[in-house]
Amino acid sequence: MTDGRPCKVFNFTRQKSYGVVVSSLDNLKKKGCEFLGVSPSGPVTVVLESDGTIVEDQAYFLCLPFNTKFMLLHDKETWAPARKIDGGTAWMARESVVLEADVVDSNIIEAPWWNLALQLKQDLTSIILMSEGDLQSLVQAPCSELASALGFQEKKTEDLQVTLQSVLDRREEERQSKELLQLYLKAVENEDRQQGATSPSSQDGAGDEDMLDGLEVDSASEFMSRTLMVLKGKTSPETRLSTEDLQAVVSRGLEAMQQVLGWDAGRTAALLQACEAELSTRLQQIQAMQSISGTQQDGSKHGEGAGTATQGSS
Image 1 (spheres, rainbow, N blue to C red):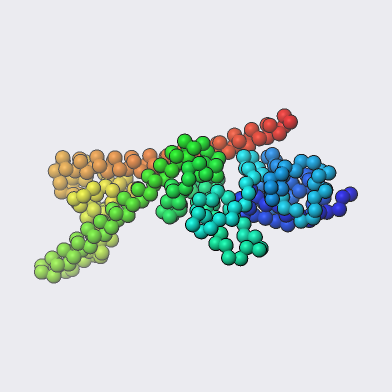
Image 2: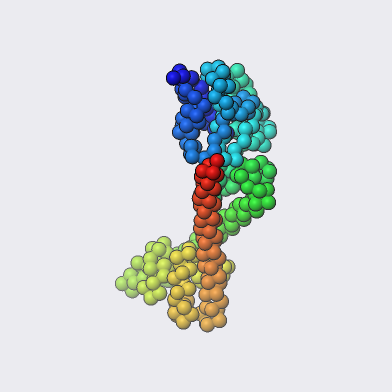
């Protein structure tokens, strides 16, 4: 039996590396996949980390010196040289850069969007959890390099970047809406406070419970006091309500909301129509993200099935 040979294995981004002792090329593939978290059932190619030379022959493998560095490539992954770049151009790099032991003063960093792209490749719905800075990095990433990292065609990647920009725009609109709402509520509270100071106190303290910072429930309408304030606002109140509040308003119907708001039928109908449209838009966005997630999962299953079929026919 061949003695064990110490060597190092890397994934294609060079972010993961492990030292292993193996007795054969097949043993290297098996152990390397285990350590790197790669499925051994799919096709795996072994190359030299230094220059990308493909290692397929057992005799050649045994001729290599101890502690040789190997890279395991899975599916559509390809070898690329490790780049050493300065801070001014580091963000443009496709590969994760490696700091060698003899490099002391180099300012070396990896592209800020690279790990985000790998995260999206695993689960597109993770867009929802990304910060605005992360989304901006992906939008500004070179389209061709981002397409390569995601395994997408460039046209599909362009569409994805447009979608990410839309998510950014939406968040900015929501932030501005929240700021306007806070200003509105503050103005209403100041006005109520001034009126309370000039008007005689209510008999037996009636109504005090309903004025606790607008958080109490109105006994007649069963809506939060702040929700009623927003509904009676002048500028797009439907965009300032939560999805739960929108559903509650729409479910009440025209006549009930007329009584709650004290408005005429035309004005109340216009508000309900706006709330229905906003609720429909939000539900469509949720369905779209669920559809993206389902499509990605189906594609992954088909890809695994195709890989198994190809391996079985070989």
